[in-house]
Image (cartoon, rainbow, N blue to C red; front, side, top):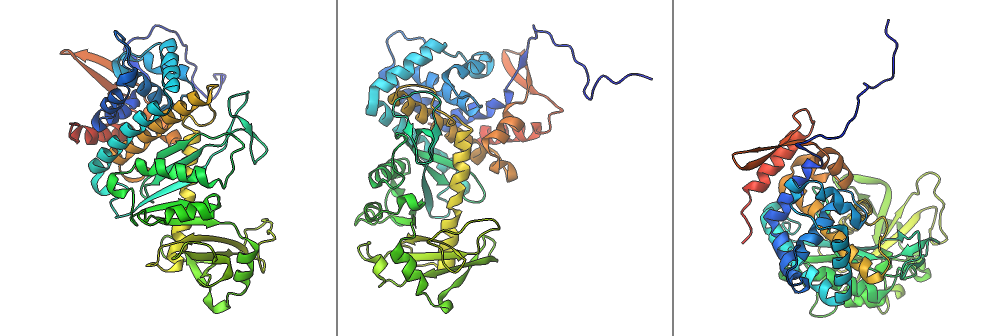
Length: 460
């Protein structure tokens, strides 16, 4: 009888292997860059920052960093994983060259940021045209979620400060376009702020919304077909008035803090006015009801005309503690909207689906937003733009290439199942081929996705 030596086979390891490519599934991202024209757009945008006789194109250098972040990197030096695979990613700049470019763009200030953002907006419009019926605007309305994110700093960095959660770091304001139940979402704004920036700062919400609207196709930058959705951080007079301003006509669904005036108005709502809340499939949500506060209520004095205040009460989950703003053992929340053509239960469901923004924030934390790796605030704003480019790629690739439940996979799952697959590099007839591992469970998903990407028209 043989003695067991463990649960796994014993494999001896040695270096010197050739013709093997790691992270071979990243060709999905490379092909997405090529088909969307992102490489040409970023290269053209950063042309003013290219020095004479420079070996590396600044646009390619920046995209290489974004690809490394999309693959799980969290610092500039992680671009080394691309440098090790020139057959897939081409020539990759050295670490000092990458650092010098980030410093150069940081010194470029608003001009460099505008160039990058304009290029992303142009490519985004092209991607949505390629996506056709799967595009975020295919249903006639685009939803943009604005939310704050706390990013912890473990060392002294510029603008790092104590946050409202008693941590230390930064408090950027992010915005994401919601792809709905059948997709994920893509970032449209990342506004770097100090850690002690307020959650209810109207000026920051207005600036973030301006930047987010600039990322949308021109026809969607004003009008009711664009919905701005926030939590109670956006529930200020100034921000709501800006959204409803004449000539802008944006739709909005903005969370509100339960003030004493709102609390008193809720207590006056008759029992017959409460309507059961609904689930996405149309079923009644157990233990939850919604009602609309009368337009003549004192708590609506000073707010824009046409505003509707909708309140939801729900039995708290076991173990939850009630707040002093709750009533009759029910948890109270409320939001305002200027949509008049829908039932209040439908509007409450639409606002509740703002929780998908939390999924987008979780994906961002897993894609370079766990911390800011640089010291200066201008450098970290460039890093934040790089993170957004990486998230764009992780949203556009499933949108254009994946089908079924695979389109809902978040970055961690994409990396584990698709990007991390190994392949053999074969050169024959002056052509390079990547032979993916036949036994890998998701090889067919990768090859089918590549077929869909290659079937798309080339940019330009």
